[in-house]
Length: 382
Ligand code: SAH
Ligand code: SF4
Picture (cartoon, rainbow, N blue to C red):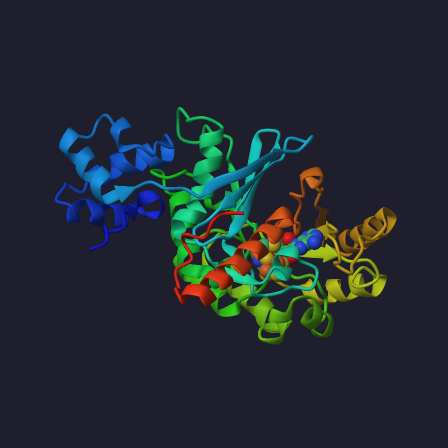
């Protein structure tokens, strides 16, 4: 008989932790203590949980574990941005980025290994899709970042003040695990981050926007990138399934769904030289977005990566585009690039991982062919 795999408590919500405690014959209020040790103090060794009885700790060590992804690499940019390359089970790797900005510390979290949407300007998309991250692997990124900066003394007193689901992957295509992880981010027994400071960015999975509206209150960002369907079909292939009018109708429902939900929905617009940055595109954008729910448009000058085939527009062109939109009633900001010296900017996430992942993939395929085994967990990391 093989040894029973231990259950990883890192991705458990409050309700799941209570159920687990009952399951192993403990009182359910123990869930609170466990969650605080895990998420307030980033403790992963049950022995250190000193307010739990000895027998309970021994039982926990036997059946459970607290296991975050393994840090393969940590880079610190000259602007203070940090990037972690994390190894996840099965040979893949994802990236997490921390962006300090005054009192604010924003963590950019990944939701999948690779991405199936395959936007034409995104390096993650070029990598293809490997698999969804588990809720433990998603919240594990917040856990690791918090651990790096030391245990917090009180709720809210740690450098991760904001989370954006803008790392690798399409979060709404890994819905259940992303929502579970976001619940822990919001929960006071987790990270106590308010709904306004958690933003989910999506390329536009319409049915899942509606589901999210029912399930959890967080800020929404939409990767728009084009002012008409013909162009968006090319840049964001998911548009062929959920075209602009359907997407904007879902945004309207999201905005209307909860009273006083949020100030606005963010529309992200990556600026690609000669592709979507012309005055005509600005005019179309104004037409498309006026008289809708409150919107904040965020221009992201393209961050280049090898063989992308796209270029970043010249600064005066970005400024002129920005000015036209603002002058015509669209609240618009330009996103400053952070951490580009360590390849941590938007759309650059994968960098060295791509090779590593590809190599691991090839290796796994070889193992598969040689042994016929489906489990590549023991593949060596290269
Ligand atoms: N999959 C989600 C979230 C991750 S991408 C989504 O697409 O919304 C986070 C943001 O970075 C998206 O708006 C994405 O379109 C943008 N992005 C991707 N590649 C980029 C690049 N090379 N330069 C600038 N922004 C990019
Ligand atoms: Fe996936 Fe977002 Fe990249 Fe598109 S932009 S390929 S949805 S990660």
